[in-house]
Image (cartoon, rainbow over all chains, first blue to last red; front, side):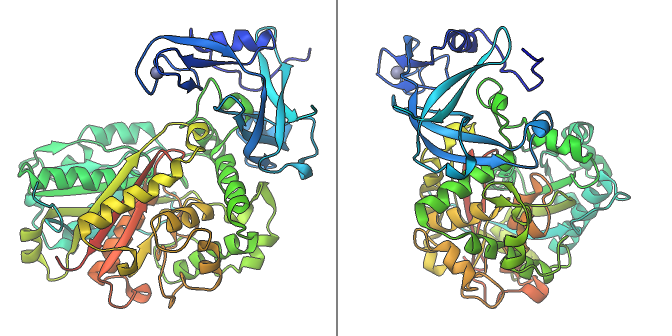
Length: 137
Length: 394
Ligand SMILES: [Zn+2]
């Protein structure tokens, strides 16, 4: 593949689990076994009960667009060459939110509450970004 | 606990014109506004025993030097000052520095506090560096930055969802800009003083949908300062101080992804705390100095602090009620969209403007008979929600 020039995610011992999952086309999130809280972004302890008894679960990869924007200008410097692009907040069916890009979609058709599904996009050997497209199923 | 309502007051304010001033150094601005605030208060500078500079972002060396008591030396406070420390919470640094000053005064640890902000976002950093800086701060490096998120995208998020939820039109949102320009035209310290109609705003190009170019704030150089002291001392200094009648706040999140839940609802409990302390309600407010950054921030907060009904803020602006002569003037300095965005100074500027209106010193844009002014502030990507109420009598 062409050399990827956009910013890559910061890899920490915690985020590595998530990004390793993405490389295998698995969208992971955390779940607190003590209080049941669904957790994302991944945390070192449960933000509700401060418990450390966290497990990773696999999402079905489906959700709805909570809100979105199509950036034409004023993008972060690294992204200036890839405008226009859509950034969105997605409310996942499992009850957490994540940020991503909406792809494979005519931007004029985007709207809040549109159902979307994950589309894994490998960008380097190590990193596969979980993007989203309008739900097909 | 005994109420702290009206036990402290802002007694002096200082500000230099906000704009593009390549020849005006960081410390020159800071000294000018500190001097102006001291003279405005009519207080002896040897009474200032605490200095709280507010976090500057354009140049980390300037900020580090403020940490290291630069202002204490420049203002010659070294014989009487007891403490200097920087307060930093982005756009809400204004509210947090005021609360810190109140605490020091109410406990007797301090007699008078100088809060001073200076920054040079207009000329102190180049445009590329400015965009780069705002592209990484207050965001998750693991889960947000890889998707091209930015502060501008955040403005798009908020406006998109707000329009979806409330049916507010793009023209109504553009009328916020029209209104702020009308205020800025009356503010000699504002950068963008020419009028701009809603139609002109709507004709500008799309930047990050649905935010258009003329809905964006403008980075600028600027500085402002204020002096806080006890109500007793305030009464000796002036017959019209700006008493701090109520404060309330919530601090909720770091990232926009977290905040995009129902976190903005926290404007309401923050305001409720401030109203309860002040012993008044939203109907009593004579002027609202609402923190802006982008038009939708004003509309969302205006509704949630109770100044108009849910989904009605856009109409309120479009009908001219927030403009000069309107029934509830809003952000009478022009805000960051018209006075100019000086970093954390955007919040300081609206707090200073609230004090200015209460003290009756707002010149051409003075709102008649201001008894109560409400001000708001928010830092990061909407990480916290601060509401203050100033009044001219206890
Ligand atoms: Zn838990």
